[in-house]
Amino acid sequence: MNRNRIWVISTLTVLMLTACNSNSSTPNTPASTSETTTTSSAENQKAASPTTGGTQSGFTGLKNVVAQTQSAVEANNFVKAKQEFGEFEAYWEKVEDGVKAKSAGTYKAVENDMDRITNGLRVQNPDKARVLADLQALSKTLNSYQ
Image (tube, rainbow, N blue to C red):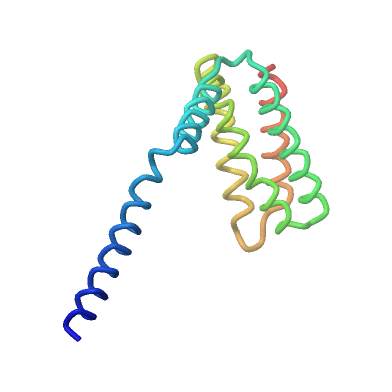
């Protein structure tokens, strides 16, 4: 009986050590290294100069978001407008550093327009005319930058 108890404890100890050992080796696998490299590459692309292709696609995305938001507001679909404009920030993050470096005035205008539109869509009963005017101002700012 004592012998069985020792055997069970030994077996459990070996299993626990094996399980602990397999978890600690996972972060050192090549997959983790490639994920780190990919992240660094993405960060480098984000910090690229304003003349890169990523900036062009970022501005295309910004303009598309503004157009889709404007269509939703014109149709009095403010829920959709809010969802559409929610995507603006993702595109803006791709280009904002380059815009800020090239034109602080444009950067500030976009940030201000973005805040006004976000706040305008956040209220329970958005002012359609005001939100449309803010979207048109943002569109004009984006078009004048390039």
